[in-house]
Length: 122
Image (cartoon, rainbow, N blue to C red):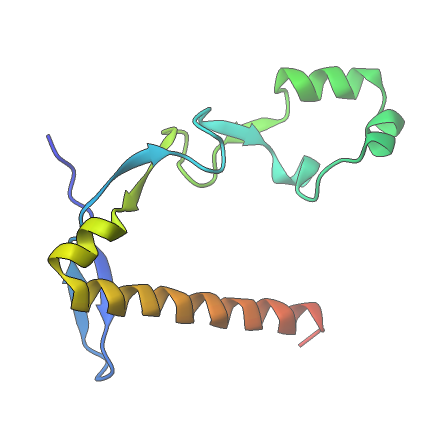
């Protein structure tokens, strides 16, 4: 059974258009298809070799065995994510595809500005 996915396009008039762009399932970028990854509280900013050495052999062994793993925060453990097939969508519905892509770009710009403001204490 084919799974349907929808996206919401917001117009300049604050109307919502529900769209069903073409897409497919792809291996999750976060867990690389494993369904789990190390808890970000453990290595969210990465662990340097000197930090790993300080933490000791037991930690390193547990870390490599996946003791600190949690279900993937992106795919929820499904190992795949549904992704828009942009080439196909642009071919069949270029107006909505381009508008939605621009909406995603604007959302990303706003999020980057908010993140920068938070880092500066705002």
